[in-house]
Image 1 (cartoon, one colour):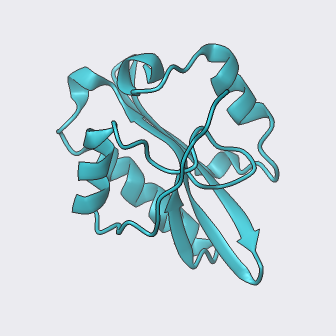
Image 2 (cartoon, rainbow, N blue to C red; image 1 turned 90 degrees about the vertical axis):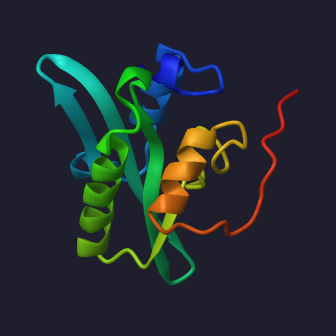
Length: 133
């Protein structure tokens, strides 16, 4: 599903690394949506301390392309936000949760994610560059 949903190349090894190397892993922040027996959306949440501020958010949010624009991503994001706020998170982030993330933010090419986040009230806090060699 991630390979079909994301603009950047993603494989099973990368997803496993994202899950297995998470510092202070919080399985209660890993959410999924199903349509019968079919997985249709996943949100992987995390928390990080930045100085005295507890930040948290989604390191990965994907919705099967055939199921997009039906509110599924918004529903998972809302649930994740509620869980994060319940544990004391004061700043919500998407992607940029170093040291374990897929991107330093939301890739510009992922217009569907930008639209979802804008609709949910997120604001652009800055821009980063994901450099590869």
